[in-house]
Image 1: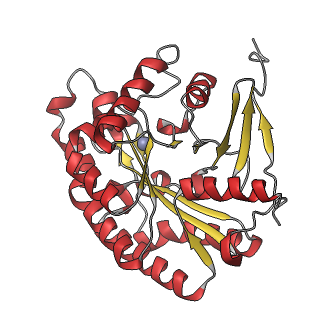
Image 2: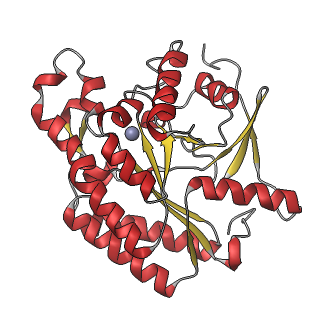
Image 3: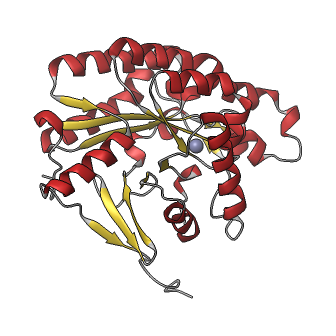
Length: 294
Ligand SMILES: [Zn+2]
């Protein structure tokens, strides 16, 4: 059971969002700043995303008639403007994902510069400010949360305190949280990337994806929210994406689901509250004022 299920539009049993983080080769440039330009293997692995996977993914979405959310670092917006244009043309949402995939913990204290540089790239290249944010490596901090609220963001999608969307309140304001978790992230089953510290045994497409579909079944049964947090260069590979596409088509045909963007969910939550039909669970931050062990 879910404590506080959201009444989804048209009586749908479950909201479904397949969210892609298009990190591309920003990952190697931030990890190995001294010589990333010489490391052609990881750069090419990342470039498979905008070059090969995104067109494939957009083609599927168009055929199935769905709009979804993509999170893209500012540097990738600047480097792959044609990919960005194709995503926007399909009616999809692009959220903030740092500038060069910098970790908000290791760049703590200088986040404003990185954050606003990325924001500037969104305005220039997408023509609008993003409504949502996902922290690189999920490492959102109080510093970033303050920036999100200051810049009027509607939601974050980096934290894990509930099964379904909830609200985060701070002394400065509030936003929605679209919660992530590792069970619906493709890094553990599919990433093999020594340069950034991941040496996972790569699972077969069906085995890796099966874990996601089990998560969906539980959310569907409880009337919840199913979100994938996946990467074009991992889940957009041919064999994996064929299976995701088949799952999407089958699910749309046989289940009562609402495929949507995270921004679409934020709008829906606003509308429910305006009607007095539902109230989100609230997390008040900070959790603690200082490290208890210090
Ligand atoms: Zn990322």
